[in-house]
Length: 257
Image (tube, rainbow, N blue to C red; front, side, top):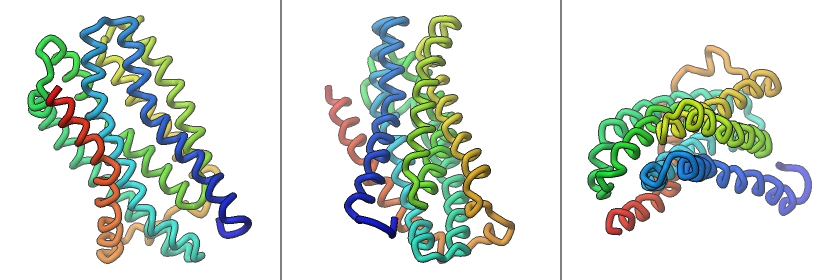
């Protein structure tokens, strides 16, 4: 990213990121289409009603993980590999903490959120089953988003896109299997999404282990630094809110409608 035409480098780096953001939303779109085709109107409406909540979760994770790796990109660009590795380890710890908190909060509060959004009673059961599976699988989303952000921090925005495309196609296959073969309804679509997201995260991890030796961390890299944690939180939390604030506005509109 520091050699060649800046404009050309930025465009080449940007396009896979934009496509990746689109494919992140593709999961819920695929779920909606397949559920509507093979389950019925109530299930279709249930998945659609949860779309904003899914976008809220994905947006928050995209923002917070991207924020945690800003420091990683800075150290990598400066050639400070020791500090870069420490930031990767620190970001992984913070992502783990955020994942646990977000999972617990969402699973505890989701029933109340659906009621506050005036979810109709005839679709509430399907909507609740769908979104609870998604919330239980937040760890899969966090794994992919953090590792993808680390790769992007090192200037590689293509591999995360490749792995995401594979996972999106896998999601369609699993949707069809769980819904048509096992007749799991909207919850089956959610399980398909979580499994596909987990696969994309595992692919990122395997690629890093096999092909990115500079990201191989050692024991000393995991020693916590309070100053580093504060910096990453100071960047990550505002970015998480920035990425997810649109979903909050859409939830208010959906509630009114």
